[in-house]
Length: 316
Image (cartoon, rainbow, N blue to C red; front, side, top):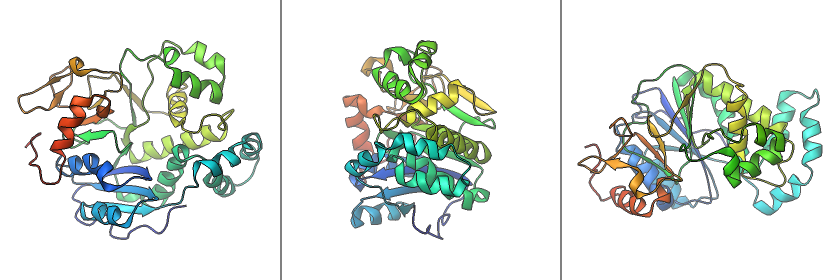
């Protein structure tokens, strides 16, 4: 589990918005585009990054950038795979009438990092939910902020963001693999033409995000097989969306909203304004670019923007 939280979490924050992220075996340089673009975006909330296996200098740099760093422990992949072979047993134990605390104790020990992060977030919010109104759960290394990620017309509930319309569950080998192991081939066949949502950018009001986290954890506990695919939390995320396991769920098309998922896009698939900011199809600056690093020219340009000594050329 995570260690004691920094009591100065909200120091310097002027809003009740919160960003939660998890990092394993990263350093500050790899997270710099995320951290520095967020700092320049106009965001005035709190940022919490749960870190495992990070050097002390990188931790200091994150903290000096206004990030609350919470250490946690994750066993290496070899240890995880040894435990994962026993998944049929763990799944049966999760199905018993054992107390929620005992199930959580077991989950902390048998979930892979990609699933473990939802436990970390749920545990954190159990203690601090009253301090926040809106929350963003986000990946780190492949996210760049062009504007305050909360500066758009919100509605209550949990906001899911679809990948590009060219991406379909049935034609993506990763989604086929994740979902077939977790929920069986019939689920793939029934939903092959659906556009998947990416778990790397999920927004919501605090109550909605807490419901989402509980749905993610409970669904993971009952997945058919986690031993063969360790990094498949996106399969769980899409199952929750497709099965409508949450009330007040809002689903956004790619290219039209506040998040642009660029994983299958090319250099000719997006437009920029005079300052170089990436626009959506409504001609608006997109606050959150996700998987921008899949486009080499964009990654190179934004990496220069996010260097500590560079002026903020986007959205001055």
